[in-house]
Amino acid sequence: MKKKMRFNTKAIHGGQILDPAYGSVMTPIYQTSTYAQTSPGKHKGYEYSRTHNPTRTNLENSIASLENGKYGLAFSSGLAAIDALLKTLSPGDEVISTNDLYGGSYRLFKTIFQKYDIKFHFVNMEDIKNIEDKITKNTRLIWLETPTNPMMNIIDIKSLAKLSKKNKILLCVDNTFASPYLQRPLELGADIIIHSATKYIAGHSDVIIGAIVINNKRLHEKLAFIQNASGATPGPMDSFLTLRGIKTLHLRMQRHSENAKKIAYFLKRNPKIGKVYWPGFSDHTNHKIAKKQMKDFGGIVSFIPKQSNFKTAKKNDVINLEKSLKYGDRISGHFVQGHIDTTSRIKKIDLVGNSWFINFNLSKRYKKYIIQKGSITINGVSLTISKIFKDGFQVVIIPQTLKLTNLIYLKNKVLVNLEFDVIGKYINSFLK
Ligand SMILES: Cc1ncc(COP(=O)(O)O)c(C=O)c1O
Image 1 (cartoon, rainbow, N blue to C red):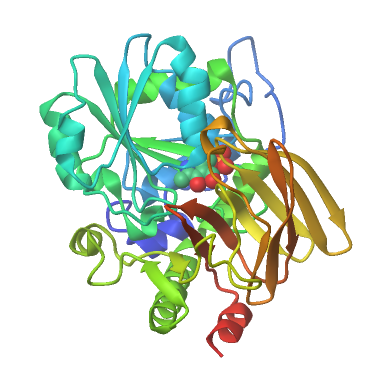
Image 2 (tube, rainbow, N blue to C red):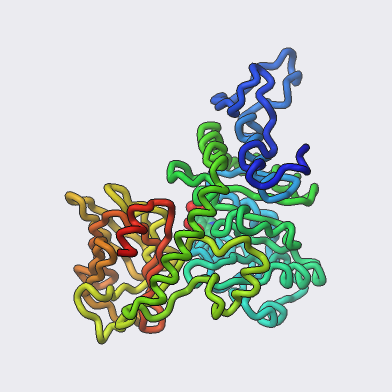
């Protein structure tokens, strides 16, 4: 039965153990820390909810089933999943990673694990030779994201799987931005999949959760040990919400991809836009690989407006913003989830009326750039650098409906990185 399920059916039923108590069709929320034992050590497979919980088990099975993997493990966040995986390494081990990497992963690698003598190399993985050059006898892990965020680079998973196997190195793919609907790295030869299930998998901005999927039994045992020993596990309510979100994953991903395609072509035709980054364009560097390894091209588009040069900056045309302003999900209504990734930290956030005032500290790395005051308005969302401090700057955001994931200063240009979802209202107004 399991083998015959197609993806859409798996999203609803995959890996699910029907509730043995009453046959409830939705997985119950087993909101309990511990379980009654008929005599010491005699239980029904569940002793303590850090170690196992039936709601979590169903979630772990569901994500494993979507990725066509044998074992799934759920964590209290995507970063907790990444943290657990890195704990399988030992001092002296080396990791080769992509240079266009989620900022939180980079921060974890550089500020925490590097301290324990794990060495990280960051290379452009579009060219496999760059990876080969960094392989040493200590390399244990190749770490990639594809598509990368924000540059939408596509990395060839199959070729990297061949290279990693040849060198007996594990290949890990952070599959957050594709989701298993669009791309299944284990089928392409990867060893490990990581998810920030907070994003597309859960899909409703109401949970922070992470996952690992693997086929290797020993690695599963090792990771399950770390999951329990370090204890960053999700609660039953979060596991339930994620399971519920998964039931529409296929529909959401299809619509995300359709919407992003419309916007990508719209932007490409727009005379005010310079470069658009979207792997669906036939002139995208790795379009052919994207076509081969993904079912569709996903829900993220990045672009550089023309005149996004500091010198030519005009009001309502450009924001002179230094580093990634990354809004994990939403700038809309009264809710901002914001962080400026590895290098620049949010110092203070104030909400006054409908406007957000966010003060950023700028790290040393970016101090060489000039920050200027300026504004950009995109479809009714205005972002302004309103104040410059000695060590940072203040941004004022007046949000409406736009989801904006990144604004990045890039080689004297500003990169705007938008995330599209099924909010038709926004898409329609943008296309007018
Ligand atoms: C690609 C990627 N991986 C991992 C993470 C970390 O996940 P979480 O925020 O659930 O800890 C994120 C979060 O934005 C992400 O974008």
